[in-house]
Image (tube, rainbow, N blue to C red; front, top):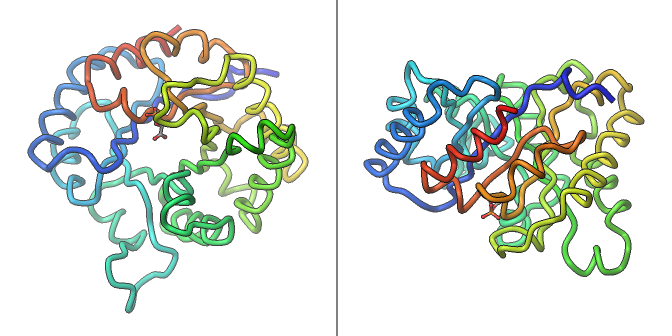
Length: 256
Ligand code: PEP
């Protein structure tokens, strides 16, 4: 397993936090603190209404901006939804799809995650595809089956070529926003299961080149150890991404 084939990606998920003016300040501060840290890609995924000010504040810096969802249809009568073309035109490069909060509270299924992923990739966006088991699944010993099934369903019909623009974020649902973190070995094991599922679906080369992040209460205290694992190529960070100084420490930990 050659980790050097993959660039580490540290992405923040602000969820429903920050007004546009707060976003401007936080992006500028994050950019300043991570200015010389070129050993990984740095992404902040912000609420839709913050995109304009975040993109403006990130101009000329190493921070890239992402959105937190995208609709699968190109246009039409879908009140409240945002298309991939709309995101692209605002300057967004990345989009999170299938976050557990969308699956849990907004009826997201593997079928809709797959449709959104296809629409985002077709428009030229990079996708951070989230998946992971809930606590009862881990306790029943079916984590491996769950994540490989989600990987297969969420990536169904996505071409090998498009996999260059897919990052998978392994996010055990029991670890998101709870302060509980998977141990580095647990994170490595499940990221490895996702990687071998991708190898079965595509090829060993594509699996080796796919960035697989860990997400779930990653913070400035535990990032270095999690990121040291061979199958963990970065992090998707919720709470700690809201505080630029904390987020910058995670980016720093990814430089090693
Ligand atoms: C997330 O929102 O994807 C996440 C991992 O959140 P937190 O870091 O707060 O657990």
